[in-house]
Amino acid sequence: MDAIYVGIDVSNDRLDVYVRPSETAFAVARDGKGLEELVERLRVLAPRLIAVEATGGFETIVAAAIAGANLPLAVVNPAQVRHFAQAIGKRAKTDPLDAAVIAHFAEAVKPEPRPIPDAAARLLGELVARRRQIIEMLVAERQREKRADAVRVRNSLARHIKALEKELPEIDRDIDTMVRGSPVWREKENLLVSFPGVGDILARTFLAEVPELGTLHRRQIASLVGVSPYPRQSGRWKGKAMIGGGRSAARTAVFLAALSAIRCNPVLRVFYQHLLAVGKPKMVALIAVARKILTILNAMLRDHKKWQPA
Image (cartoon, rainbow, N blue to C red; front, side, top):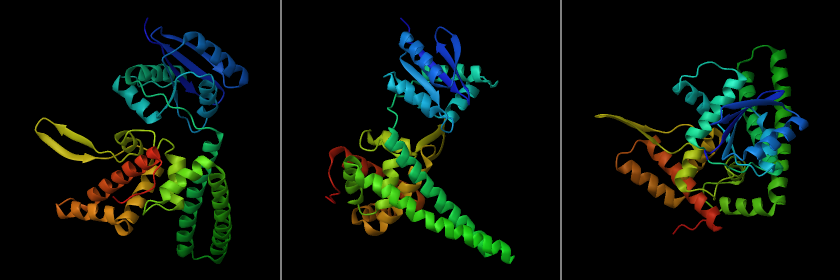
């Protein structure tokens, strides 16, 4: 019997579903009754994998319903699906066609099913993301304040900056309450901050943005964050290996940790200086340090052990 793969395209008010290899399709409403019908039909199908495209949060309730029914689920990257569609010549774009492409992508690529974060993990992720947004707005508003000539504009900017500066410690307190109030997160944070170069903010960013840390292989975690180089070679031509993709917020966090570690972590400083001594460019060496940090943090959480220089 052929394995069954299901693709689901999520829109504001409906879910388009496509099943391979039977090439059947149906749609349900994106509400409680529609989700119940979807889960019932998927249980009858017993698919090997159900793929749902990430659509800015619309997919959350759908993914929760499917995962709650103990069905194999993968939330897939929309950019990867779009590139896959272009590769197989599917340029038309409608919701039913998108569902068919997602199902085809699931069958061909077979992304690994992963459990979705629980409500607490999603809240922590949103709080960390909100903190990042506030900092970005503060930086932008302060730059605008420097360039503004009109007094009224400067006063408006000053009021907004003051409000943002007041909000930032509130968000920090909420994050601190969540992390320190959870025994699991508290243990993970204590492990992470034992590494010279990772402070409270970076540790909580890792908890929110890379909940898989400590559960995956080192190459998988590097690829997930986007610091794993991929080769570029064709025939006799060989280009420089590049990094890309992954989770941008987590990648930024690990680069900040690398910049800190090459100054305050003796082991990583020696490693960085060795790479420079053998002729590696500074950015290449920094990427290598970032990848090594991820490997170390992954092992620390996996083994439940604090940082040990040896």
